[in-house]
Image: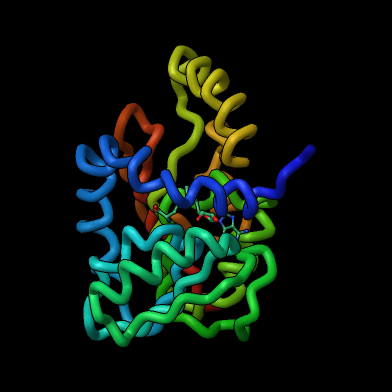
Length: 205
Ligand SMILES: C[S@@+](CC[C@H](N)C(=O)[O-])C[C@H]1O[C@@H](n2cnc3c(N)ncnc32)[C@H](O)[C@@H]1O
């Protein structure tokens, strides 16, 4: 039986924070702490998951955070209630079909999402559409590297991550970001380039 990616994440939502706790403490939380406060104005977070970014938003921003997994959103909602933040709303929505106007948001954030969006370029094009010209998108993503040895490990991991989560370990996400129309203004590499912090803009035409 083939499960949809959203259903896989509904199941995984119960274990997700527990499974990720090691790498989260070692690296990911530091990247979130550095990147998420850079979002300004009206912010769209794609694939909010269990809400690990929520605590890092400035009080001054207005965040719409979407995910297509009800299970993940329920966990995010618990975190949001504990944080008692009124400037963040959680919405069940597919990144490949955003129900927002063109040029609506000042900033976009996404952490470890475009490895999973079933059609990543479609999701990124939608993201680009709703970002204002001159707006910035902040991506924390894992992807294929330039190293043959590391990539061979990623290919093996990919077999399991695809089956259990619908997540790909072997996407060229930086290329996908460019293919969707974004201008990449910076790309910082961590863990041999597997994890990257990418800042991208929608040019003012
Ligand atoms: C690996 S988790 C990352 C969650 C969170 N951003 C974090 O940093 O922990 C990927 C998340 O993206 C969501 N996702 C994947 N494809 C999506 C889509 N097309 N639309 C909305 N959410 C999506 C999944 O449901 C899941 O919650």
